[in-house]
Length: 599
Image (cartoon, rainbow, N blue to C red; front, side, top):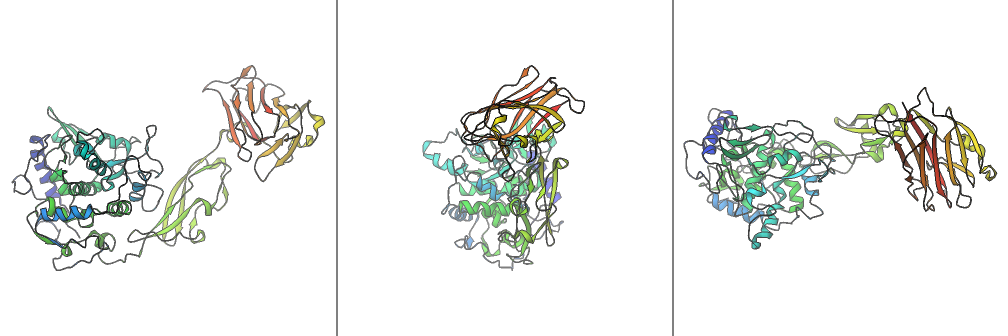
């Protein structure tokens, strides 16, 4: 195993940070020379003899697992030499994806941060929920954002920076480097602001516990003051500390004027503070998530984070081994542990089963269609994706072609099984209000309107009809009642292009009374028009109250529209309910159903 931190070391370092941090509040100069020995700072990359952590076997020679990416790096004389060589490697043939304007500005994190068993979602820093990839942040929603681990304002590469014009292209590169960008909860990202990432201790000042967009405390915390001094420290969750630390060290390697210093760095200093904490964090193993982020960014940006590929290199560049030489073949690569799991696995062995392209929103009356609503595939040890599985290869807890009913309303868990693998996801079943109303009427091939089929002579008359236990007066001005469209789902056709109805209405024969309810508060109509219609309207009234007229969507035959007329909460009226249609002078009206709600 790679060197891990231990509790004794962590406690000592936190105390050391407190001593150094309080007296080095906001500075653009490093408060401690990392190349000298300070009795108050423990070297976080040195193994404590009281722990079971061990150094990698110096006799092992590791293979090149990165397809020659580091072929020009074989050895180094000291940390400065190594940093120079890494600088040359990570700046070679980089593909630029603009953080602000590129069409791919969300795609990078959508791939790099996608979850492992549901490829439609992303992992976030600072929060544990996993939003849909497509739910990206806008000014009007709480979608996920992209967080800069090395804060933009600390590095002076934010919009509105005070760098000279000659450095603005460099600023774009810094701002847009996706090795430094992670999908993030919007609210906590805003809470982090321009704070230095580091460990927080309650003895240091006022500690706050930011919540995510759902109001949940997630484990992050921040300190905002030390006595009368303004201090900014933000501590992420334990599982993401190493990933964020290595991203910060990467930025200070790729960009020569960025640095990592002890103490607390201030806005515009071109440095990130809390060196001791970041060094300590970076001794944690590379997680599968961090490894995935590295290769995901590489697929877009064409460069890698060497501190993810070879975690020990951090110590040579920024830690206690800065004056030591080394050879790359003796440095343990994360590929060896994450992908090969210590050579117990092969790169193309199956790692996990993943689902994607999921349909998760349904309306009552819709069907779950397996071949259309879900896809699945196997993910290999190296995180490459195999071809999609055949639909028949996996089973789903929902029956194929299952039609959702009102009883299914709400959230439902769906289980997907393939061999010994299982994945789960949730679907939401909703119903348009017409399906939840007190009174509902669905037109059919044998409804009472069928008695008037193709009888133009019946136009201009009032016809009394019993529709689902409620008596209505029905009137159409001209034209004729036409056929019922089952296959297309349009419903009953009223009028044709040559024999148009012009106008038509349905009105309850008496004041509305259904199941002892009389106070009407909602009327819903599901209908559509022929493409030839130029202007059509619906008017609805309850007794003497008239709703505002609604224009019908023109030319939507085959795509029924729900037209809802609703009163405010607690408001209702008694009386006859009348639904009128007008403007049908040169085409057909289609009605699928209508509904009335009352209390």
